[in-house]
Amino acid sequence: MLYPLMFQPIFKERVWGGRRMEQLYAKPLPPGVPIGESWEITDRPEGVSVVSNGPLAGQTLRWLMENHARELLGGAKSQGGRFPLLVKILDAQEKLSLQVHPPAGLAQSLGGEPKTEMWYITDAAPDAEIFVGLKRGVTRAEFERRVQDGTVAQCFHRHAVHAGDSMFLPSGRVHALGAGPVLFEIQQNSDTTYRVFDWNRVGLDGKPRELHVAQALASIDFTDFEPPLVSAPVKSVNGCDVQRLVDDALFTVELSELPAGGVIERDDSVMQVIGVVNGALRARGGGQEVMLKPGAFCLLPAECANTVIESSAGATFLCAEAN
Image (cartoon, rainbow, N blue to C red; front, side):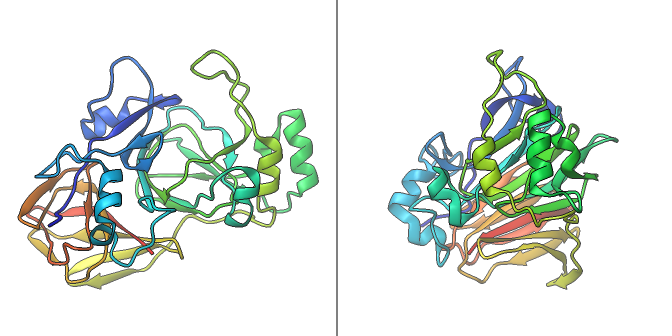
């Protein structure tokens, strides 16, 4: 029988990264290097999660998908036989490249994979911002001209962001993180990114990072002007305040506030990923128990329909489901 699964994080060195995950979440980062991403739940060729708790400790998410996909996913669809979601924590201490991910209808012809994602900001410097979508009225011709003269950032719509903000990023929406935010990223299982502009900087190898202008221009939605931050009503569900942040054909994401002493008894056979923002949770199911502190993620298999989630002091957490 499966049970609530936790995994060893996989840390990715990035030229724009920092050390905030160490300070905020006590992540055991490798010393002396900028860490931009912690891959918390991943079934990718370039990074596969390893179970860190219970009888299956040491097994991989790839092994689980190969041997227990039905018990793990329930009715959720795999991504070409792989786990459908990729879950990360990002720490952007410098601006990321201005970029886009290819839409489903074009990805294969461009040699990539479609990638829809969402961001939930968990911590932000006072001047933190994101670049998302185009300024109203920007045309493709202007965008292409500014790519050539190095001023394409002026085409991007900007948002100041604070802890608690979220943004949905369907494939085709141009975007970048500015310097300052730390966030949870929940996305389609893909790692295809087409860079439009990288601020004329060099990568960790001292060389300019590759741009993908032709693929990016083919992928960008040039009708996507000034998308807003997510705004969702709060509903009370079984004594828990819940906001539906993402309701997409690929996945849903809810933000929940569980009060002190609150208990959630799962009764649906659905796969869920839980990520704690603040406070602490305990999840019990399949004969196992896990404690989740801020920055910790847990995969609740569909087979564990009777998992109980509780918090003695209260907690804020994300809950993602693949469709």
